[in-house]
Length: 470
Ligand code: F0G
Image 1 (tube, rainbow, N blue to C red):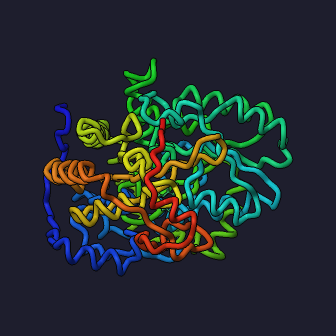
Image 2 (cartoon, rainbow, N blue to C red):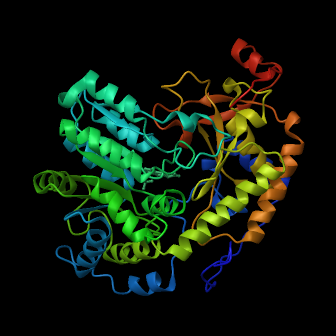
C-alpha cells in the first residue's frame, strides 16, 4: 500500500466556511481565547480532537436504518455485544453514552475514598472520575516519555519499577485496580508495548490486583506493536489487540475514537459479579443494560466502526498521514513530541515560544495564534509532569479526526504553522481570567497580557525569559 493512500473514496461532502482574520479576532475575544468556545462554522480546519468527529462509512450509515430501538433486548445490542466480545474476548459488555460515563461507573463501583489508582497517564476525565470517587490518580510514566524530542518506540509505557514501589507502599488494600491507557494520549499519543503490558500484568498478578485498559485507541496501539515490536510483524492488528485484552481484566472504551463513531462507549470485563454491580449503577444513571444511554442505531454504527477501525490498511493510512504531518512540521523547525502519534501531532509550545513562561500559557497563546492566522482549531494541553522534576510544558495538539481531512487540508495546515513559526517572537502571552474548578481546559477564559498588568507573575510573563526544554 502506497504511503498516505486513502483506502476510501468520498461520497458525501460538507462545505467549509471561509472567514477573515478580522472576524476571527472577534470570535477569539468572544470565546475568551479558548478555542472550545468557538462556533464550528467559524473554523476552517478542525483539529481540536479526533473524538466523535470521524466520518462514518457507507456501511455505518446503512446500518443506522437497522437500529432496533426496543427498550429492552434489542437486536442492535446483541450485534454490538458480539462485536465487542469478539474483539476483546470479555464476556460482559456494558454500553455507555461515552468514555467518561464508562469511567464514572467503573470507578464508582471499584474505588473508595483513600484508594490509589496507578496509570501510565490518566486522561483528564479519567483522573477527574477517579478523584470524584474519593480515590487518587497516580501517573507512573516511563522515563523515555520525558525526552520529548527523542523518538523511542514505546513512550507510552508504564514505569514498572515505580509501579512495584507504589504497590509496596499502598498494598492491595488501597489499590483496587491499575489502568493502562492505550495509546497514552496525554503523554503525546504514544503507544504501550506488549512487553510492558505483560510486565505490568505479571507484577499485578502477584498482588491479585486487576488491570484495566483505557482502550480508546486500542487499534492504533496494536498497529504500532505490529510495526515496532519484535515478533509481531506477521500478526494481524486484530490478533495483537486480542492479545492486549487477554492481559487485562477489563476495559473502558470511548467508541468516539477507534470505534469510528460519533457517540458511544462501553465497559467490557470478565468478572460477572463486578459487571452486575456496574449494571445497577448503569440503570440508575445511563439506562437499561441493553442500550446504556445510546440509541439502537448508535450501537449498530459502533459495532461496524470497531471492525473498520481494525483494518490494517486504514490504520496504516491514518498513522502515515499523522507521521507525514509531524515530519513536515519538524522540517520547518517546529519542535514536536517525537515520534508523532497515531492520530495526533503535539507541538511543544513552551519550546516554540521560549519568551513565554508557563504563567503566560504558551500553549493557549499558540493555539489562539493558529486560529487567528488560518482558522485552524487545535487544543492546548500541558504535559503531565506532576510526578517528575520537570517544569510544566505546554503542548498544542493537532488531532486528525478519522477519514475527514485530506493531504490538501494538511498542506494548508503546514503552511500556516510555518508562518506562525516564522513570526513566533511577536506572539504575546495570555492570562487566565476565569479558572473553572475542574477540567479547566474546556471552559477556562483568557485575555491578552497587556503592559498595564500589575500582577508580578504576569509582568514576569510579559518579560523575555528564554527557557530550555528537552
Ligand atoms: N480516555 C482517553 C484516553 C481519552 O482520550 C478520552 C477522550 C476519554 C478517555 C474520555 O472519552 O470523551 O468519550 O468521554 N478524549 C477526547 C480527546 C476528549 O480529545 O482526547 P469520552
